[in-house]
Image (cartoon, rainbow, N blue to C red; front, top):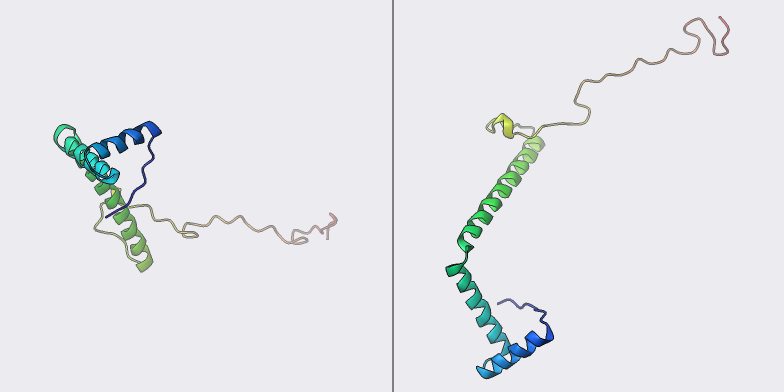
Length: 122
Protein backbone atom coordinates (compact mmCIF):
# COMPACT_ATOMS: atom_id res chain seq x y z
CA UNK A 1 0.00 0.00 0.00
CA UNK A 2 1.24 3.49 -0.86
CA UNK A 3 0.83 6.66 1.14
CA UNK A 4 0.25 9.92 -0.69
CA UNK A 5 -0.14 13.53 0.38
CA UNK A 6 -2.93 15.61 -1.14
CA UNK A 7 -3.25 19.36 -0.82
CA UNK A 8 -6.84 20.57 -0.57
CA UNK A 9 -8.33 24.00 -0.28
CA UNK A 10 -9.82 24.59 3.16
CA UNK A 11 -13.42 24.55 1.88
CA UNK A 12 -12.95 21.28 -0.02
CA UNK A 13 -11.35 19.68 3.03
CA UNK A 14 -14.24 20.82 5.25
CA UNK A 15 -16.75 19.25 2.83
CA UNK A 16 -14.72 16.03 2.70
CA UNK A 17 -14.67 15.77 6.49
CA UNK A 18 -18.46 16.30 6.65
CA UNK A 19 -19.16 13.65 3.96
CA UNK A 20 -16.86 11.18 5.71
CA UNK A 21 -18.66 11.83 9.00
CA UNK A 22 -22.15 11.51 7.43
CA UNK A 23 -21.28 8.09 5.98
CA UNK A 24 -19.37 7.00 9.09
CA UNK A 25 -16.09 6.64 7.21
CA UNK A 26 -12.61 7.93 7.78
CA UNK A 27 -11.40 10.72 5.54
CA UNK A 28 -8.87 8.27 4.08
CA UNK A 29 -11.60 5.75 3.26
CA UNK A 30 -13.74 8.46 1.66
CA UNK A 31 -10.81 9.61 -0.49
CA UNK A 32 -10.02 6.00 -1.51
CA UNK A 33 -13.66 5.38 -2.51
CA UNK A 34 -13.75 8.64 -4.46
CA UNK A 35 -10.58 7.70 -6.36
CA UNK A 36 -11.90 4.19 -7.11
CA UNK A 37 -15.15 5.71 -8.38
CA UNK A 38 -13.27 8.19 -10.56
CA UNK A 39 -11.09 5.47 -12.09
CA UNK A 40 -14.08 3.25 -12.81
CA UNK A 41 -15.89 6.18 -14.46
CA UNK A 42 -12.83 6.84 -16.65
CA UNK A 43 -12.71 3.17 -17.68
CA UNK A 44 -16.37 3.09 -18.68
CA UNK A 45 -17.06 6.61 -19.99
CA UNK A 46 -13.80 8.21 -21.00
CA UNK A 47 -11.24 7.50 -23.69
CA UNK A 48 -8.94 5.80 -21.20
CA UNK A 49 -8.27 2.77 -23.44
CA UNK A 50 -7.29 4.90 -26.44
CA UNK A 51 -5.03 7.08 -24.33
CA UNK A 52 -3.44 4.02 -22.72
CA UNK A 53 -2.77 2.43 -26.13
CA UNK A 54 -1.13 5.63 -27.35
CA UNK A 55 1.04 5.74 -24.24
CA UNK A 56 2.08 2.09 -24.68
CA UNK A 57 3.06 2.82 -28.31
CA UNK A 58 5.14 5.80 -27.19
CA UNK A 59 6.83 3.74 -24.48
CA UNK A 60 7.60 1.00 -27.02
CA UNK A 61 9.18 3.53 -29.44
CA UNK A 62 11.33 5.02 -26.69
CA UNK A 63 12.36 1.57 -25.44
CA UNK A 64 13.34 0.47 -28.96
CA UNK A 65 15.44 3.60 -29.47
CA UNK A 66 17.21 3.02 -26.15
CA UNK A 67 17.74 -0.66 -26.97
CA UNK A 68 19.38 0.26 -30.30
CA UNK A 69 21.56 2.85 -28.55
CA UNK A 70 22.72 0.25 -26.03
CA UNK A 71 23.40 -2.28 -28.79
CA UNK A 72 25.41 0.34 -30.70
CA UNK A 73 27.34 1.18 -27.57
CA UNK A 74 28.10 -2.46 -26.82
CA UNK A 75 28.94 -3.15 -30.45
CA UNK A 76 31.51 -0.36 -30.45
CA UNK A 77 32.94 -1.51 -27.13
CA UNK A 78 33.30 -5.07 -28.42
CA UNK A 79 34.72 -3.94 -31.73
CA UNK A 80 31.78 -5.33 -33.72
CA UNK A 81 29.31 -3.68 -35.98
CA UNK A 82 25.58 -4.13 -36.36
CA UNK A 83 25.37 -5.76 -39.76
CA UNK A 84 21.87 -7.00 -38.99
CA UNK A 85 20.57 -3.44 -38.56
CA UNK A 86 19.39 -1.66 -41.72
CA UNK A 87 21.72 1.13 -42.83
CA UNK A 88 19.13 3.87 -42.26
CA UNK A 89 18.76 2.81 -38.60
CA UNK A 90 22.46 2.67 -37.77
CA UNK A 91 23.84 5.54 -35.82
CA UNK A 92 26.89 7.19 -37.35
CA UNK A 93 30.09 5.84 -35.93
CA UNK A 94 32.58 8.61 -35.38
CA UNK A 95 35.76 8.33 -33.46
CA UNK A 96 38.26 10.99 -32.69
CA UNK A 97 41.25 10.87 -34.96
CA UNK A 98 39.82 8.22 -37.28
CA UNK A 99 39.34 10.45 -40.32
CA UNK A 100 41.94 11.57 -42.83
CA UNK A 101 44.38 14.02 -41.47
CA UNK A 102 45.06 17.18 -43.42
CA UNK A 103 48.12 18.43 -41.66
CA UNK A 104 49.46 21.76 -42.76
CA UNK A 105 53.01 21.53 -43.94
CA UNK A 106 55.46 22.54 -41.27
CA UNK A 107 57.13 25.92 -41.62
CA UNK A 108 60.70 25.56 -42.84
CA UNK A 109 63.33 26.11 -40.23
CA UNK A 110 64.77 29.59 -40.17
CA UNK A 111 67.76 29.68 -42.42
CA UNK A 112 66.79 26.69 -44.57
CA UNK A 113 65.68 28.92 -47.45
CA UNK A 114 68.98 30.73 -47.57
CA UNK A 115 67.70 33.67 -45.47
CA UNK A 116 68.72 33.99 -41.86
CA UNK A 117 66.29 34.90 -39.10
CA UNK A 118 67.52 38.50 -39.18
CA UNK A 119 66.53 38.80 -42.86
CA UNK A 120 70.01 38.73 -44.40
CA UNK A 121 71.05 36.18 -47.00
CA UNK A 122 73.29 33.44 -45.77
